[in-house]
Length: 158
Image (cartoon, rainbow, N blue to C red; front, top):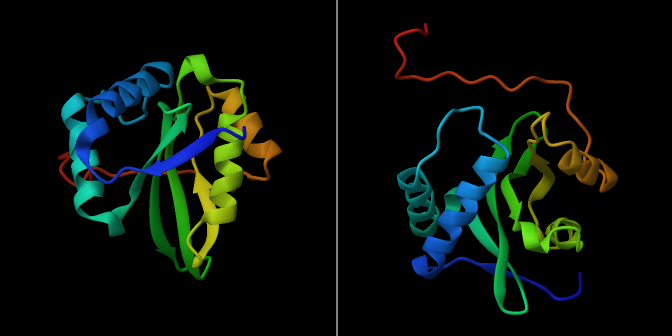
């Protein structure tokens, strides 16, 4: 996809459209954490705009129009001995799919990731076979681990 432009989100001009894309993502691929809300999306946008060390939002554009987005979150891994770049979300609008946008984005991400990045990581749900095939075709490999979470606010834990 030669016409793909990747634009770092630096202000909230695109927040409305971004929230719509986020909602669309979670309708198509429901989150394991339960219901998501517009307020949650806005908190994410505000956090990443105000604290760029926590991560970044990239807008994917074709012909001057937003056609998707990605959220990137860097973190240090003792296991790998360096910074992992976690692709928290990647979304391409339905009308722009099957044009190579996801592939082009991931190839560019590999080429242009921060220099201290030693791995790019992502999660993919079992329901999303098409995305899993894409990621594996580009060299992503499953890790032999299960992701587990704990809600520190829950009275049902510990």
